[in-house]
Length: 270
Image 1 (cartoon, rainbow, N blue to C red):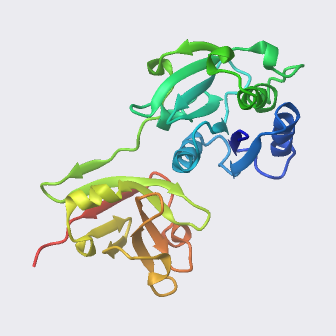
Image 2: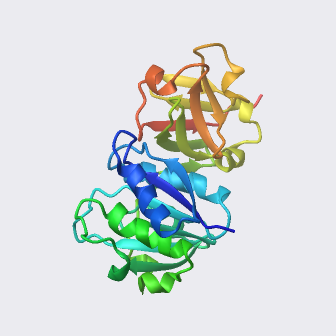
């Protein structure tokens, strides 16, 4: 079976960067299968890159190689790392983009990449995705061991993103979370998971969800469950509470942004 390499970047699709990345891998590991996860991560938005990668990785087979390039520190003394977790390998800068895979029980080992013999020459200071990470991904696809890429390091020494605050008060029936992602359709994904709601109440139809001046009661079963333009709350495909608008954009209609607070309260009995 040929190796799978996924690509997650903030390169966009207007320049040659994505194509060049694929060209380097194709030249060094022509048998590898390249899969685009996302190239429209907001520029320099490490958190969004981490979120997309975390959401996608569980659906890929063992030994998949994930190349994650959201790298505002390119050319500085920031490190490039390879992380083995959940039976897969993740390559990227040590800037927090690989945070979701640095926790037990997923994490297995991490390497600080230092294998200059594999890099493209001359080495650019502004495109390490092309000159370092793509050749390293190709080497792994060709069977190179992780230990051949550099020096092992402890996960405690790697940069981690702070988790968005989530406060759950089961006694009083409240959850305080936030918007952590806004997708292409304008749906708002929160950091409140389905299991958090289940622990709060056995009656999801009674919960109240608050965002700014908007209040929604209960959970819908689908995006199309309301009238056109109606604001809904539902559990999205990632398992998290979302706010959406039937045939519309919740982000636009609610004036929403990432980090907006979202509050959930348990409905009264009777």
